[in-house]
Length: 251
Ligand SMILES: N[C@@H](CCC(=O)N[C@@H](CS)C(=O)NCC(=O)O)C(=O)O
Image 1 (cartoon, protein in one colour):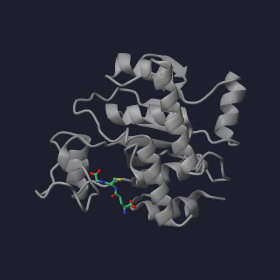
Image 2: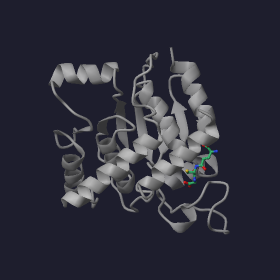
Image 3: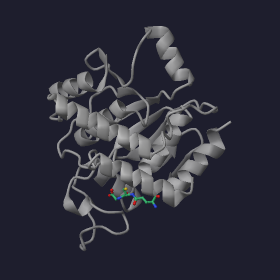
């Protein structure tokens, strides 16, 4: 798909979700052991969990489970009739599946996230997430043949970013496990694209945050940013990252 059309439909998907997964909490404690999510990028429930992870500013190991892929097959052969999203927290020796249970759990252990309790809330939530999937033409839902690297890739992202979504879809289709580092927005001057921020003052992230760490290393904050420890490559620009993933890992 042409990159501009691709970005536009991704923008529409974020709009259907009212830009949930943009803002991140200021105070956050990363758990000692990395959380794990068995995820399918354009699954309506998985999206709701990832939005909350952005809000809580939590990093997580994503194991993509597209349809027809080996990850989903091995989950099903080990656990039978399991459904996504499947969340594992080794800090508490807990595992659970389904957005409702996971959000309730996150609420209890990691901070306040919204969980729809009314039937209307649940239906609206599911519908808008399904519409986001539809407008993305189910990109990343089905597995594509790939070469598997030894180490997980690392992606800086936040859920609603129309550009980062394109990269996450490709990682999902190719079943490439990655560490998702969420760097949602924490103040007004974080808003807007990296090169056109809403504030006219020189940009400075909040001190002692993941954004601040990133800024000190790269002189700005922009997502998506991919690091591949298997090839020692690191890169900005969604279009280049998607092309890199295709060239390096698609069979
Ligand atoms: N041309 C870039 C655009 C990336 C971009 O503008 N990303 C936005 C998020 S959607 C961003 O990093 N904004 C600055 C910020 O979040 O601090 C690409 O395709 O990757």
